[in-house]
Length: 340
Image (cartoon, rainbow, N blue to C red; front, side, top):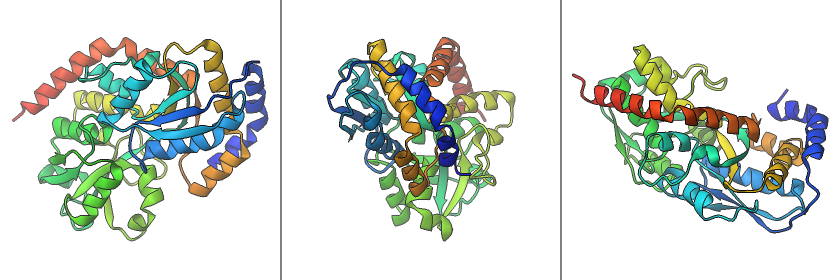
């Protein structure tokens, strides 16, 4: 049974929950979902999926449109939602699952607290992978330890940049990261043209937009950034498997934990409880929508939704550890960079 079909079997319970949460007031103002990346990437894919379907389940059935707001690894969009966007439920965001990591590290430019966003729900967890083009001499993660490999990247703050950089620092891979590409599509094009040897991208984007590359073995899958091997990638090692000591496992696990947050929708802090309830209600009802489930099955994208309350609890718990995490990351990173 497909993941969409399993969710459809839960439709009566989901709709009952939606009915309990539904507020009486209706608001027909258009809703914008701001995507913290350019067109074509994973955040864009899932943001537009939600935009196509959630409006039917919100009070007043408003029009919903996705709007790209790339910049600084989703920091630009997150800052906008946190500080500028209206707090009436008409402005939502979706972006990097590493926003909490960027906050924890005290990254320059961060003007938000991740746990204070109102998390509406997760559509799917996220699996990022580092790949090399078939002509690259680096075809495995072990070979990436033995020789340099040019890796196209987006913003220095993007998890697609941060993840291979963490492997360089911790387990001594030799990814030479070339940032500055507009989006994941641009890094893949650069790889195909021979400008770089590889890139780090979402698995969903790769399998949906470059299925022929996988079929024809045009790319080598070096590593997946998850705590456990994905069902789709049973033969690809995780970043954790590259760790050689408990300390190395600890720092890598911090970097890859964003996979659980995944492709999640959030609203600004200060949004009223009734509007947050309406948005979460709409999200829950959307999950049982036959049109959405057909869309999911047609596109073949991952679909393992989680309600907003669970994401909220995960991030609230993480926020309590930030002072400890900052010190640990700084110490371990400096130690690995100063190694032999």
